[in-house]
Image (cartoon, rainbow over all chains, first blue to last red; front, side, top):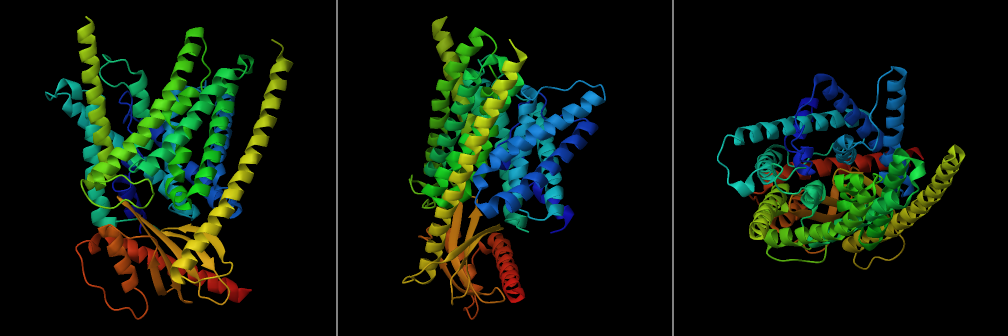
Length: 190
Length: 194
Length: 166
């Protein structure tokens, strides 16, 4: 499959937002500045690469697959410490690791790493797949926020306002994406 | 996640929304039970460590140790699952690992600061049982809706009733309906109180 | 609060955590060994019901191919686990040197329409197999079957080349 096909698949049929249930809260979902988008894609690509290679070539041969979440925690702490040191050197403040605002990003990064790591084994595909999956997530959250904005103008029954409507919208998106998955690609394995 | 426009207390429902990554995958009783147990153990370990570790370590260190503790528990759960049913492990290991990084577990890793925070943290540990039960029940309900039967054996789900409920879309629809029903009940309870 | 107390506590906790992680590693390796035995047994018995003797298991996780069973004097067998939205299809496939399927046996009861169709498509792809009848499900399953067959061929070629190098 070409890189364009891979990006197309991971944006639609294999989208991590619907396949992994990573529905954004709506407070900031879908709003990414250009620099934060680049940083997010790079983080997703690196997380997929590091986790994918370590899982396949370090843990699996020794039967240590179950240690994967510990490995990802270690990677997370290491990356966070490096980032903090870099920001301190640049004289910029950094958020603490236990800042709740970082939790959704951590969850998405791990979901992307797990999703891509289980599909690909080559370095190149892990990197591109990680970035493409993150791009798919950003696109899907953007679509969802646009749908929610449009629905605010509609007369929706009171019990469905807020999160129920968000999940129903996500359900319709998931159905549409499942159609793409079944109709064009079925399953991706490279 | 705020469940509505701020009119309903978001506590338990917010956590249920945070469980969506597990609920979406829980499309059979066996998967639901496996994920429910994995979540409960990771959540309890994280919450207990955040409560019991000495405050002098500081919040970042307590968070790091609690998260590592939750990851270790998820690792042991995955190993037990692999011994029990290797096929179930192969299907579910990603979600078992992801349970450590779901929002309720990450929130439980944060050391409570005040006395009232600590009391709330103890209360929220009890909610963990409810979340685990919910994950298992979601699996059973989705399996029944999708196939017309509930099987305790993984990979033995056959029949076809409403197959959409085995897919992520079915999970989102169920969560939406449950959240809407919860809002109606809360509103009715508040109406009868006033 | 003494700073040295905090440092000491942190190191003690870190050491305890390292021990627990090591114990988790042993548990994982043990579970992996037991699972390998179960999977190898399931695949061997599906292909040769009266199979006896030890079979070596290698976990691969390449696409829909979960792993390989090597048994002395017999063609290599692969365990295929193909997932689709409502379930999964499991089968043991023995292959020849170029990766073509010699025999394929579904594991367990293939109850739903997808499983039955996948079994027919995989069996139809085997050497000397009669052409399978067509179904409306084939269009959505064809990519999965083709991917799996290509993966099997690549894995088996890789294995035989590695053996020849030895």
